[in-house]
Length: 105
Length: 165
Image (tube, rainbow over the protein chains, first blue to last red):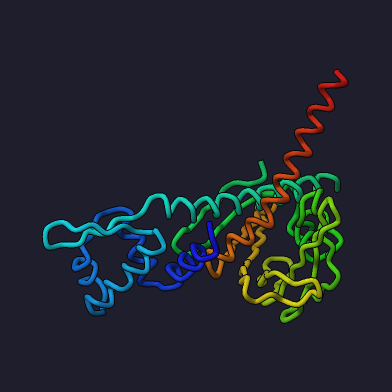
């Protein structure tokens, strides 16, 4: 993961609307206009959010007739999940060391 | 098994871990309150942590570094936000440069630790919230390098045992 990739991911996750869009399109397909109907903002504003997420490889966009369908990008999301998994491993080791210490008295 | 559950929230970049220890709340509180005890578990055996400063009070700062097998050092700092002995502790955790000064660009992890009594045992809940994915990556890279070295050490120990057998 290059610095530029990391910057894009950081930027993508820094906004509540974008996090909500990611959450939704991971479980179901939405059109851009379908997403725009959910938020108190313009179609253009939502389109911009989707573009930011697309650049960060968190969603993909595909034209279907007159609609643009947004889907969660499994690979990009997996990367974020992998980081959390690794963080969990660090804490599990710490907990193991605390338990060992407490057992010593 | 000490760890009972762990929950990851991808969108909120947060992580919750619940563990249970066979010791009273007051005893488990000491592993956080006493820097000499904290040093025994914060870093892995191959990357032990040394706390040089530990002002355990709301607004107080802690400064530490971890020392690697080749003598390399990685610095960090904590800022205590709230302390309610012996039940809860809230602090920010970040990276530091060679002089121990905070490196703001690498971001901050916000941690809340809760200790609860469960019939003489202690349930510890850790909630970590990351500022950004970039910062989570840094955190993990720092921890992972240690973890991998530790795992390698364990494999060596097993191999050595087999060699003797």
